[in-house]
Length: 134
Image 1 (cartoon, rainbow, N blue to C red):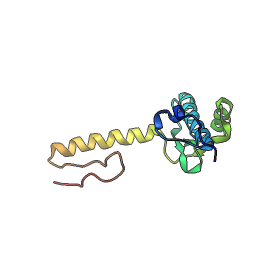
Image 2 (image 1 turned 60 degrees about the vertical axis):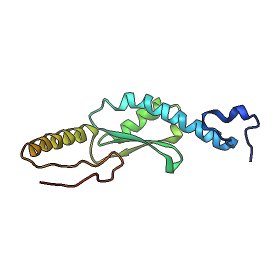
Image 3 (image 1 turned 90 degrees about the horizontal axis):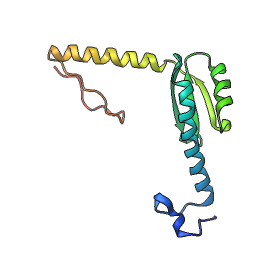
């Protein structure tokens, strides 16, 4: 293993990284930056579903679209500085549709609350924070 020889190289992490770990961390940080750049293209499209950094697959940037996947793949690959770590997949629901559903749910929740029925939303962790109550 090759370790960073100079203790000043700890950076903000506070511990040594092997050269391979450091390169991988830098690559993943570049992928996050690339994601922000590519998001500028994708987020304005009506069939855009979202993006994520797939850490389990080695830090691959994944964009989802509900239509035109091959067209979007070509365009994103053309714009990408690291195309080898980019995936474009078919998604079942667009971001726009999800936002519309969220708005309807919030509207219904307010109407139900006016009738004395409270709905508890899940926390951002995805775990249920409560239950239906009357």
